[in-house]
Image 1 (cartoon, helix red, strand yellow):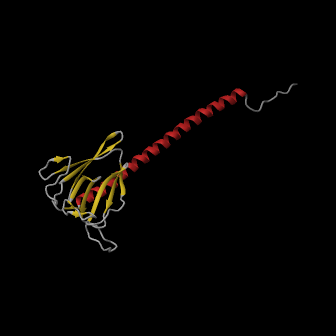
Image 2: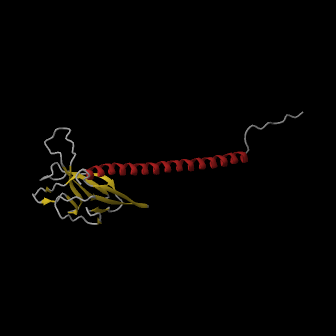
Image 3: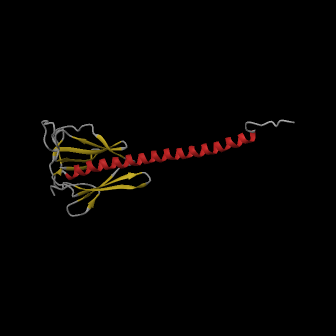
Length: 198
């Protein structure tokens, strides 16, 4: 009587099939993981971009809505109109009200602010005093992929590409800002200027 030999284990073919199946599953899982990571990064970048635009819109709208028709003077004593655009490397410069003085510092409730393009960003800088002061270094408020363009609405309702006031206290009624964006139409922002003073 012969004993049958039982084989415990796998043949080489079975092992190769198992490894091939494992490799297919691993490649699929790796592709799914890569897609998830890419989607997360793209989503985070888009969310950060939208958040930056909303923060900018909040500051921009508040600044322009509180613009006042008050001329100012620079450090050298030279007079400037209440609202300037595209002069001396400055995109916009004007005086606004509503500057809270929570720490009781010796300064007025008016603040002169300017917006300028520096590198790939729109920078907002404030002045400690409307007259005779230098601006602070400023902070980036909006990343840019190209230079923004401005249009100004006058009292007679026409839009102009340049702001040339007849009076030093004249403010535009509204400003249109076009911010170029990569791969999509430009961001268009229309804001009223000095709504409490028109």
